[in-house]
Image (cartoon, rainbow, N blue to C red):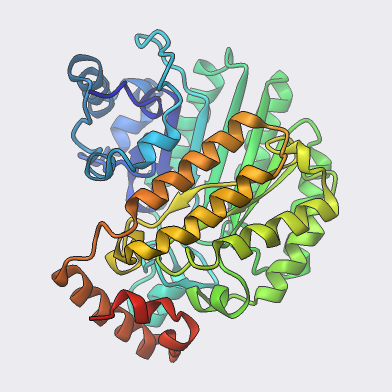
Length: 400
């Protein structure tokens, strides 16, 4: 028995490229909505798929259809780290929307190992596949309807958080137009909100400066820039193919030094190739944070996010041998020793690390490992890299 997941009541996730509207990045859409359906602003809180899932939570206290990812990983699932109602559950008859995530497009300048042509235009180009682009009518209708929903139904919310994903968000053509539209809307009615942007920070100075200028212009908005990375140096460049790590590091220091950027974050997507150097990664994060901001201001001026790969299977943390739990233990020891000011967030991060530890060794059956081995060898040819040299843990993973 589990308590209802807050995400179905508090979140909206819009992905125009896939014509997908869900309430959690781990949830699978069951029926694709039509243009006619999304034109109705009541669709956002009253669509049948959402209503049915909510009723299932309330009546059965178990994961509904569409939530199989968390159900299959429970109790080491995203549900455990992200559900805000594990103790106190509010009135479930009301809409508590406070978080809106928009996958703006697929235009990207990297081919990260755990990504695909569905989310990266460069992956599509590399594989000789059509670039995934949103149907302009569906996308424009969805955005207009969402703006109307925010304007008419969410004006009473004390605080709204937006999260923007790509591709690489800051090079997508209409990214800044969307940011301006929402910023103007909230400025007009003086409603507090945060604009959180996920970026690979593999960007030139003109784009970084444009983002900083946007933050300066809309000083009433809490702008959050999350640099997406989980390894260092050559290991980072091998996982996130196309990355210039020194450029990322320079841009992260630059943005951290800008007061107009309210909060700066590191967003690691944990995977089988990042566990071994996670302590070094966290120490690197702390060194940049302490250079530009106060360590005790966690969640106020800086943050370290938590996420992990659920696919491809070859990069799932579960393929690691049980001995790799020692690397997570070291990370837990490091985090426990640091005074970051925000106790609750620290506890959440520690819970996340313990969940990662619980996943290690859970996917080591022969067939899973056999398929994973072939996948890595295919990636080596595709990217012309010696992964077994760059990532010595592969020798442990596939040791017979």
